[in-house]
Amino acid sequence: MLKPIIQISSLSFTYPDGTMALDGISLDILEDQCVGLVGPNGAGKTTLLLHLNGILSGKGTVKIDGLEVCDKNLREIRQKVGIVFQDPEDQLFSPTVFDDVAFGPLTMRLEQKEVLSRVSWALNEAGLAGLEKKAPHHLSFGQKKKASLASILSMRPRIIALDEPTSNMDPRSRRRFLQLIKALKATKILSTHDMESVSELCSRVVVLDSGRVVADGEAQSVLSNRELMESHGLEVPLGLKRSQ
Image 1 (tube, rainbow, N blue to C red):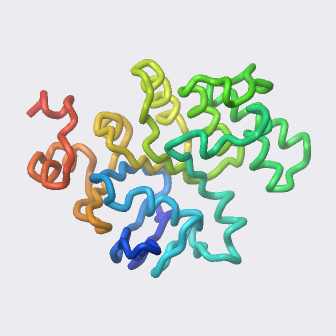
Image 2: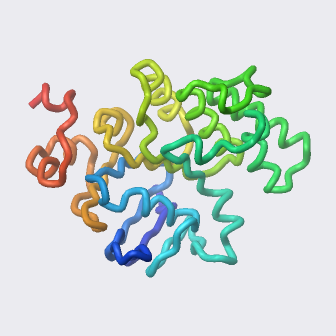
């Protein structure tokens, strides 16, 4: 029986300007699930992701693999949870792709041989083998997305959270990136407005609105519920519309 690898209990968060982004969220995510986190702009999706590895900290409890997300556990938590930001420019900061992908393993104080092995593996998994010496700002947008993912994969996280993974991608880059995500062996959370990608990749969908969970269930059941989707600023994926 699969066990919860993420346990969120009564989580609330208010930004300094008074905006309540999360309002008492309780949610368990099972090991190896691929979960779509959907909702309108301002629903709290990104804010929730940033609580998974302690970038943000609100009221309530978040546990990763039984370990509470708190200051004393952050080092271990961040080895378990990798977040791929919406904008790769927020993630890539080193002179070369190699340096960006090696950064995480180096912070883990791994031996040089292991660092090199992980970087090689992550770049190969992300389809960037041979681009180690390339400057990140010379990459295409799709390649930057892959480099951001590789910088997370090199840490071998058990959980990968992706914020708007397909935004600003052309159709071919989007398709290739989705294929890459689908092949990853980890618990995956996709925060996105791309309902087609959720339908394709996710077995479960959680709908957020105004910082609250308003629906949580089997992906096709939730996504095909036109009344539910439209009442929260979303649309039924085209593929499901055709089958209705």
